[in-house]
Length: 218
Image (cartoon, rainbow, N blue to C red; front, side, top):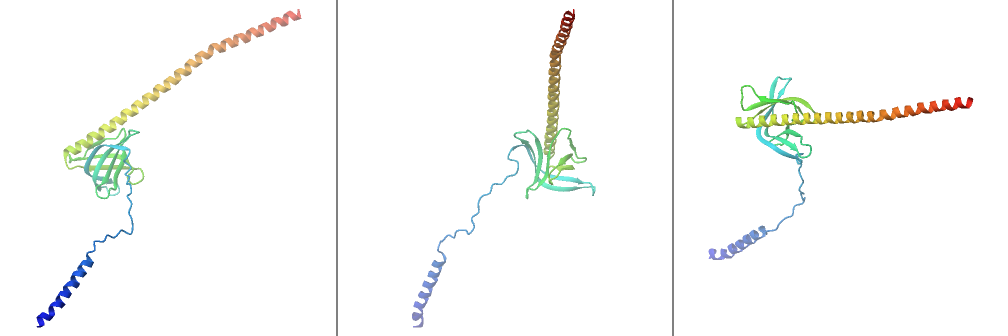
């Protein structure tokens, strides 16, 4: 008898649990309190084309401590500006994207293999990665000899092309100066006969005046 009287209570309890479970799984969607908007992220490289892109690790020479200090591991790039044609070297850390190196590659710059390591090379630069121009000695290390050679070849190629541009610009400036000087010389040549004619006419007028005065006095 006890077992029979307990059946309704068990069924009632099962119904309550079922109802509670149904209340928990409502399927309702809660809208976020704060709506986040997409923000365009700019890197400053939008107007530049990448002409070289390699994974590497960068070091700078600390003059005070007379030792190499790591700047970070990431990607080194040569970027060419779409309008000016200027090429700069930029390297960012892979995780934080912090700039490790940022400088123009100009004529007169050179890069050479680091002594005792054919996967590394060194060069001097006027760097702007810290927000101000500094003379830095950099050393960069690659995972392979091939990548190091590719970097050095591109570096030398850019420096030589900048030197050629400067030579061409100097030549153009010299030609322009010569052209201006030639024009000035021609102008002076044209002006000289005019001066002589004017002087001759003045002398003639003086002579005629003297003649008139002598005739009138006679």
